[in-house]
Amino acid sequence: MSRCLWCNEEVMYTVSIKELVTFHCKNRPLCLGCSRQLKRLDSFTRCSGCSRISEREAHCQDCLAWRQRYPQLKLKHQAVYAYNGFAREMVKQFKFSGDCELAAAFSEEIKELTRCRRRSSLVIPIPISRSSIETRGFNQTELLLESARIEYQRVLENAFQREKQSKKTRFERLESPQPFIVRDRMEGEIKGKNLIIVDDIYTTGRTVYHAAQLLSQYNPASISSVSLFR
Ligand SMILES: [Zn+2]
Ligand SMILES: [Zn+2]
Image: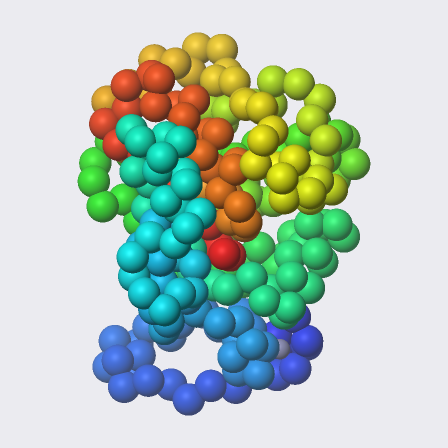
């Protein structure tokens, strides 16, 4: 009997017919109560540009504004869970107290997001600020990828000492200058590849669009972006 990674309750599930037949039981790191508090976005109607829960699948106002600003990018951001109160608590715990075990709770979801639909893809995590590296010591997105055993490349790095996005107002975030550069000798890796930009959370889209805009200058075959939460 295993215990829930979040609340430490015993994990009890009924085994599905498929699992019985294939003798392959899914790994269930969270108990039923906790996993029910995580809301999967694919059970709702979503904006086709950013996965935001919406009444229509058409692009939301934010996506329309991004398309106007970056007409060449046409991102279709994919996310798995709504960033609700429960998700916020989990991310807080994960990021600030360094509970790396929690990363393993999302391995299946990370695999699902980065499943290479095409060959020659390159998984690129969004780097964290230098000050976060100093205080936290790890990049939570890289940790999620490592727990899911997804190969990635550190293609991007922060160009300068940057204030934390989370401490800025929405306006300041949207107007922030390009924070990223492509690391030395990584330019050649990008050309002709199908790039998958990975972040933990998508909030305004600013970070992902900065990354995509920069990477698009190096002639990739395609660019897509994913996050665990939206
Ligand atoms: Zn639980
Ligand atoms: Zn949208």
